[in-house]
Image 1 (cartoon, rainbow, N blue to C red):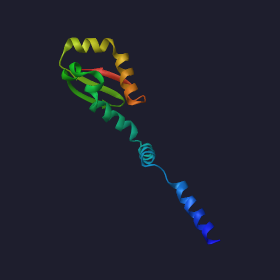
Image 2: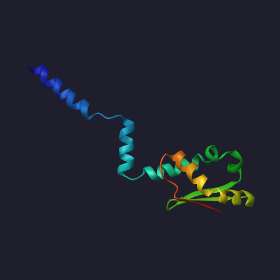
Image 3: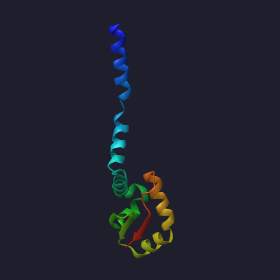
Image 4: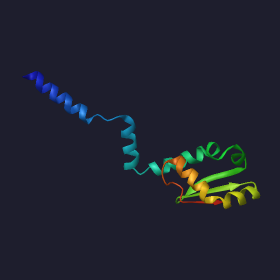
Length: 107
């Protein structure tokens, strides 16, 4: 009889067990840090996403209120990226896996 009771207790504990990845995701959502983490990852992966030539001409990247501000050293590149702003936003949001970038401003 005692054996069954312990087995039930063990099964109860196993039901509460959750993979650490899921636990961390739930924690990030609970503290609303998942959006900020995505922003940081986009800034860190700018060179990989946009390519080395654009990354070399990028002076500064930062987020403010869902907008990505990009300071460039090349006026022609700034004009070219402004013309394809919606495509750049789409690429960045696809990379992030969610709608992180609401707008992008080239400075």
